[in-house]
Image (cartoon, rainbow, N blue to C red):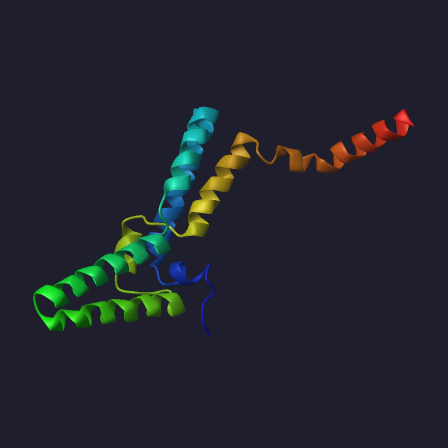
Length: 151
């Protein structure tokens, strides 16, 4: 059975690396909770620009494939095998969630989109972006009462 899109990278990453990524994320959120709204806003902007593991792997595969094509066209035709191998690894990653550069990138701290979103939504919650949802039913009841009183 194939792993889900959300689970496939963490399943193929050592638990120690997954734990380190989680710990670093939680530490950043805790520091920013004390730093205030301006620091949270700045970090949210940084998160919008952060490359996730998928984008990193795609850029890596494209770069290596182009290098192989260039070397094949200019140095030796045997280099044309290199883009084929890279494409096979990229397909393996798409299906299984693993490819040779994955452990290296994960150890470097490259996160999945879900891991980035976890930090993003924790910071938004700290900033108060979701406060209106907590009191949604109370606000609705108040609005209905005001409308009833106006009639």
